[in-house]
Image 1: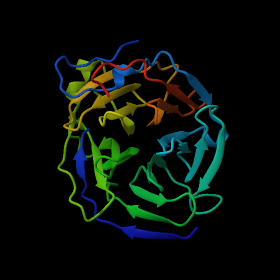
Image 2: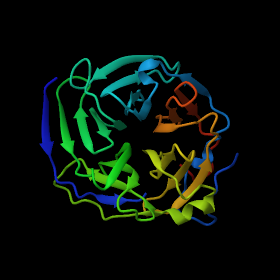
Image 3: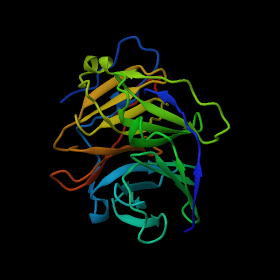
Length: 284
């Protein structure tokens, strides 16, 4: 593949973004986390050696599941029914480019990988790739990437934001660089204990839910939170540390199945599938 590099100045806006999830009574925005029983997965697949350090998941519009590890720019297709790993996409040739890759997103035929320092790789299943410097290396240690189809932008989650704002931070990057960037939003950490989640939650992945809310995972402490588009926390849950010792990837299948990827951490790397436990009237 032939690489070409572009530089965009992206002072992106900020979206800040065992137990049952806690949900605030009377809220107008419906969350989806309460629709999943995270104690009863339908499947759990052990990942092979190339995905021992699995660090991101994404699903195409046709329902194909892809994952990557955090050391090379290689994307692997994972069979959602069997967990078998098939087709591989090598960015920059075989062997692929080395780096600290922390998130995967898919928008139509376009794939995106991001490094912890903000190098965004854009590519297709066949063809060249390009690299964009997001300009976040001094303000955001990136862990998490997803495509938001409602706003046609990428969500870039910060494990650590500098300076510390007392909030969880997710940058938003329009795919069309000519578009104005959204206004900054934040998720104050002070909201988290109300939902049974430690305030030192550090994002390790982000995903847009079927309801259009945002789901974020933390590998340490092990937890999930769901937030709306104003940065209000809708739900939170601590994860079973034996089943999910280091959750680094989130994705939703076309039928609503929630996939969690855990990299090797005292146990084999795994992808675990959770179906919707039920659907309430009037909810997505």
